[in-house]
Length: 88
Image (cartoon, rainbow, N blue to C red):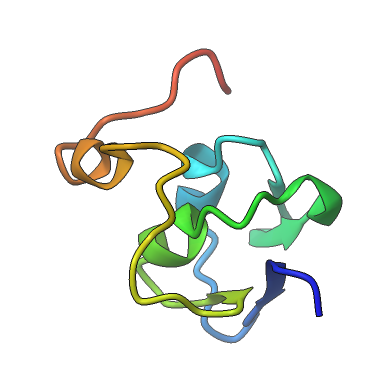
């Protein structure tokens, strides 16, 4: 079983775009008002999308209680409203 983004619950997804703006590898796109996993092979299982989704619509397998240390301090930066640079 691979560790990666596994699903978006379309019933829960509000199309807010949080996952699109938070994903450091640009895995998501908004299509027809909902988030879609456009590039699943690019997912590095950082859990930022799952943890950032206000609707709880994103599921990364396997779930982890703590975020991996791929980006030290990233969760604190997110809590303070930080954005990734250079992405539109």
